[in-house]
Image (cartoon, rainbow, N blue to C red; front, side, top):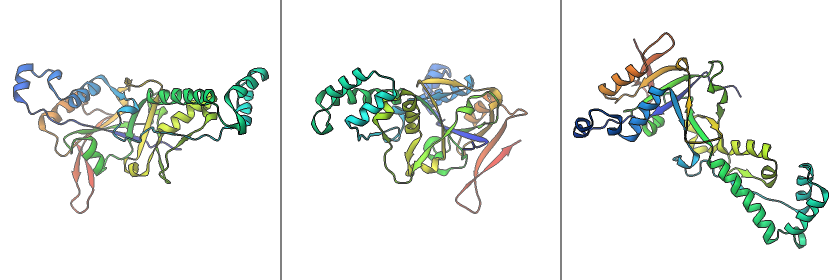
Length: 277
């Protein structure tokens, strides 16, 4: 699937109104709200944060349902394809399956251990979330503190940059949770891709986000980007003058970067971007 030429990341930048705290700390980042301080550090350091899925605001995000039609015969075929010896496979099958191809207690324990390993793998991944829409009313309200925040515009055409890792989020038409099967657990390579697919699946109720994600093997880590990859800074309608000046100094206008203000349309329930010159 073709990537959008630009992707956008919204930031909470709510002002810290405690003048006493500002005086006591002399403007130190430690005195600011956590979201605001992290936004400043990320912009100053030219990185985005890869969060673990367990920290997301959607309780269904990366949730998966194990679906198993595992039988003794399919079990034998799967492990035979993995190159296990015939004697080893038959010994496992005898221990894991009882009459009528039902799993024994040991078989259920074996499957459960593999499921938990897959869940742990999924929850330890790092995910960076972007939108392809810089004018979403809901995104500005939810992720940019009701327009007191800002939005960064990144190009996806910069060669040798992390944008090559971008993948589209799929919104379930049926609204069913995605499945993970036993064969995904046995085949680690296919299973890893299956885990990625689970991370890229969401309820259709979130489709307004028009989300693209970067999935990393480890979460809670920085993902650096090149200076020229940041092609735009969009100021929310309610951003304070102080915060706007700070952002202008951290990511100034250049030959490859523009500044915009998000403004209301005069006729419709929609926003527009006005370039700052």
